[in-house]
Image (cartoon, rainbow, N blue to C red):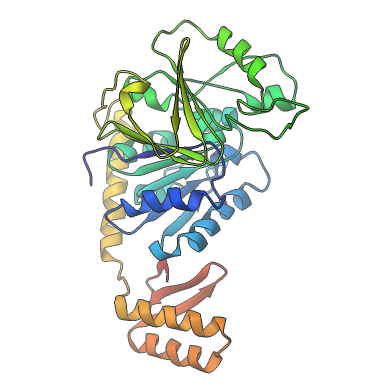
Length: 362
């Protein structure tokens, strides 16, 4: 278990777009162990198809990042007070072993309401401080702010301009930050300004005037098809993708191009929190027990060796060219080595012949 916080990836949009492959590749390449991703449904938990929304991300990672053989699990933490509550420690089991935790599209204000002060929120922050990477996209990026823009309420419903409390993730680091995804959106074409996450520059400027005074506050706009990667352990930030990141403090504006790096101090005076800072003692103790149990279970789970993986890859190729006799022969060779191939819509998975499942797609 690491004693340094993991990286934070903030996407302006497009968590399943072609450009995101390079961003995930950069993140996964930096991990020292098997990639284990937990996707929380929470931001889209109000949608009847929230499982489909998160499932699309899972399929993307399996297909586009297959060289990493990522283990990807969707956590249906949709709504408080239901069987799918973000406050249910048992439901969150995959979170304790994940080294990448991801949240994506939906509603930022819904995400805040459903996550604030829950077991899931505390667990996510604790796991990050223990080295897990965090990936936030679109609505989840907005929700990490000190104050968040109620995009649906204003843009879709027509409510008056206002702000909502955000999850204030970076408050743990002594920073006052408001993130705005879809910064350069142009869906409205020449008819409607949909930049600044669909609200347009004029309404956004009026929103800024409504914020309480704060000289340390930074507004961070992230263009579409663009990621801001923050490394709290090193104090460095990178911009990847097709667009730019805009950092605004008062009347001062800095624009960082894709491919450029900058110090995290541009976001404010940084402090690293201790592991337990801001996390209630009972939750911290229970979380550590569950993390230890997850690590013990993973260590006891057998993993296929290089020979088994090579045979599985050959079998996949044989199936693609419809050489069924070769595929059957390779399946039998894999079985002779003690592994059973399970064909799933996401690709072949392996389980030991003793029944202990290895969920790594091969």
